[in-house]
Length: 297
Image 1 (cartoon, rainbow, N blue to C red):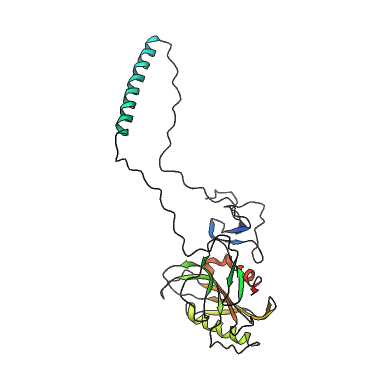
Image 2 (cartoon, rainbow, N blue to C red):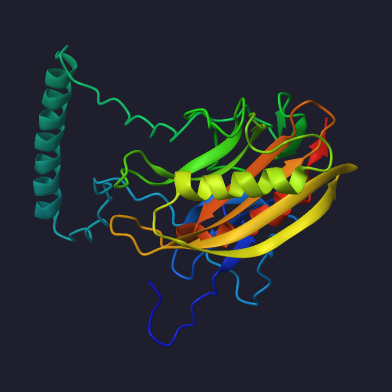
């Protein structure tokens, strides 16, 4: 809690307080986000003169530690020494009796340490920095701790689905969970691909399809980018849009999504699909980061 009259650190990306090199964590002005991301393009690291506070330490144990009481002043009278000696002798006898009694017990229970919370999804191997999708023919950045390896239902838009995700809301009205995702795969038949030059037609069909399939309805769409790109020397087309809705039962009221179709020189083009609910709007910058760092295999 910030006391009255004390300035609160502005929301933004700060170096990860856990000390992970090259990683930043979102500070919302009150607390830390659970999601980290590598520092880089599309991620503006906060340069406020007031440093964001470190993450709170682990809570202390429930028990109060023993403290040694300060010694009482010694009495000048000889009688005081005799009484103190007698009390000390009684204390020693009691302590010895307790130790002997406890050492004879064989059924003393030792509490096991509490188990660590399991991860919210399958994690990537240590040291992972890029996701390599051999089926699609592309690779792109791993977005860091808090993102899990995609193991959900195969998306019909692609023959196979690889990538990363995390859950933003469990149990939405239509069933299942709401997620943020960055996934890829070779485009399935039926989405308008007729060969080189049909990147725009294909990504337009895909964008219209996912709007109906994966988002609350009714919704409004604002197209932010609809442009041809060159990705690692390959022709591509990007559509990025903002959806908004007001549907009961959803934590989010909108989502930023981007679909990129790339002609990778194979029978099927590659699709990269990034979608971030506005409950995690601080992560919108990962769209630019991923699009700017795609390699064609």
